[in-house]
Length: 136
Image (tube, rainbow, N blue to C red; front, side, top):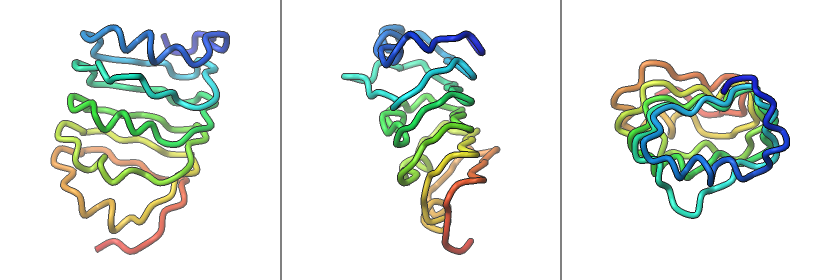
């Protein structure tokens, strides 16, 4: 549903989509979603492999509930206004191959992030965030 104006949906979109346990890809790029990224009351995205919600107007912390979606292979939340720390648990998602958080206001220590396993990562874009530390 990329580039469909969903500005009037409000914050209910996560709860509604969470009722679809066989959903494998969620693509809501440029849909004028805004505010914080809500947390579902329980995580039921048992088949979700791709979440792409870039080019929206989220002013939010990173949605930590994504760390409970072990099937995720791709997370793309670039060009929003995410802030706060990048969760270290991202590096422990066993199936994660693609992570794009470019163009947010996220913070983190790059050496701590890279110490995690990142078993299958093929694409990692953390540019235009507030990262510090050394590569080691």
